Amino acid sequence: MTYLNLNRRHLLALGAAALHPVAFAAPRRSGHLMVVGGAEDRLKDKIILRRFLELCGGPNANILLLTAASSDQPGAWRGYDQVFQEMGSTQASQLAISGPDEANDPAIAARILNADGIFMTGGDQRRLMASLWETLATRAMHTAFHARGCCIGGTSAGAAAMSRIMLAEGDTPPLPQKDAAVLDVGLGFVDSAIVDQHFSQRRRLGRLLSVLAQRPDMLGVGIDEDTALIIERGRGIEVIGQGVVTLIDGRRMRSNFNDVASSEPLEMLGVTMHVLPAGHHYRSTVTERGISRPMPTTLRDAIRVLVAPGPIRG
Image (cartoon, rainbow, N blue to C red; front, side, top):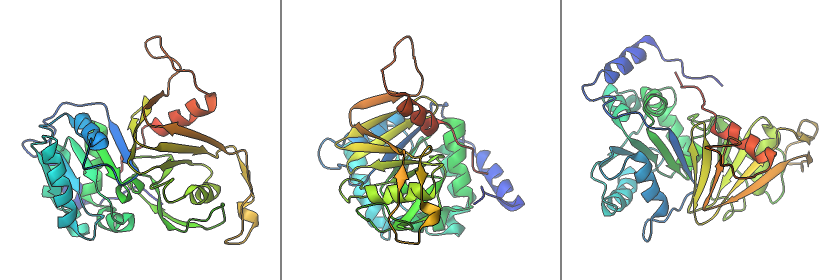
């Protein structure tokens, strides 16, 4: 797997987009990622989406709803359009991309570069990546996040695609087994972890453990429905919503992954798991303004890895 290798035409087009009259007009903010486990509340308190709007800068923030993962993009947009209007958002609009040709349009890149927030809807993460991979749109999203602090959010398929190594599809075995899931390339905003969504509701612990046996260099992040993991670049994480985030660290484990056949059960020794309920913050530093919440060193170390800025795709 490699990072984007944009040709000269792509680079020139992105440069033209960056010189758009209003590009980079907004001040730089601290970069946030919002990774949502799917089925977020859109009818009652809307805790997750209201927080997304806040992180983007409030009601007047320029927000793009990227619907490329959905098989019914107009329907996906209608569902969110009404919700954002109810929350008082004045500048939320659809970013409809149906393939690489649209994703390489400099006008699309210019819209992305101007965004205060980009929210990727659910659907199929493979469909999303088929449209975005190695395109100007992906490069523009990374530039907006790293250079301007644009808030990047995603739910369900949009959450899965935020990983550098993406969980593309797979079974849900009750216990870890070899080759239970297929991995593919993702967008790379979450650089050192693999995200799985609908986690407790669809009983995906066995699947995520199976994936980590295959990629022990990565953290595993399982996010429940109506629950969001907020990652503040370089600083810490927060869990909001109604469920929990399950953080699994197998970087020091020993497994028999290379010694067993496909579909056979896996031995995994030395795996560390943390269950992080909604309503809690976890900082990556030992002290911040003289105050630090006590936590195990294994958790603090995992959070440091999770919040470390990844490279700009380019």
